[in-house]
Length: 336
Image 1 (cartoon, rainbow, N blue to C red):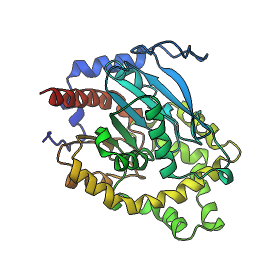
Image 2 (tube, one colour):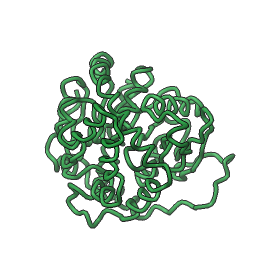
Image 3 (cartoon, helix red, strand yellow):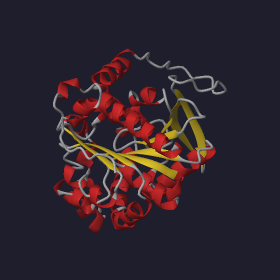
Image 4 (spheres, helix red, strand yellow):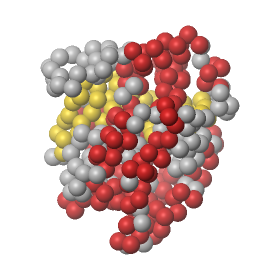
């Protein structure tokens, strides 16, 4: 069993200082990616992020790709209300060692956004699209980073084919009812009665103030969070028809809760190695949702971080360092 770490400063104590310095330097000094379309026929190089898309079930699914395709794949599944943009700094670091894929769900990022009345926005459908994407990319096995909405998407993929998932990296992604606290009360009311009135009460979650709050609440230094996050996200949320898309997903999130027991049983049966890096000050997915993973996952490395919902914004270098160490350990174990 991997060592369990519960202290919020544990990452800094257990990761070599030189590693953190190198990662910080990479995050700060990495060259920005060109905005023009990349040559889609060119091979993906280690640190060159490509912005690609695939047509799946009639939808354009956009994704970021980097790294060596001959190396193991790390699939990065984003949360609400962002997109693969949330992984913009993590991808080049992981790409030094791995093949990295970070898709945008329909209605998010650069993927297509069909009108809510024309498409079934559900977590089951998103999981199916993500599976089709990795099938098209020829990925047989993958480690998966699960954050927020990425958790039910990734766990549904895991439930469909557990042997395909080599490892979990869990960051503020829920699979236990203990994690659905008072923040979720108005959303639960919408699950119980999906009326227009109850849906309209949730539109406040789609405002600029709410978006800023998600990125800054619980952070040690909110002023260090780039406001580019707010403008990028809010532009997408403010597109005509996107609020209806998000309301459909708020409603459909309720279908994930009955699946929790199934996912937990699969955790116990298959015991995938897991790295948990969780912002403990998150009001949406609080630390109460992190601890239950210890009940079911025997090979769990557990880190609570003194930050909020979007932990990568404040703990990006530490999370990246822990991921590289964790994934290297899995490779070593597989070869021994």
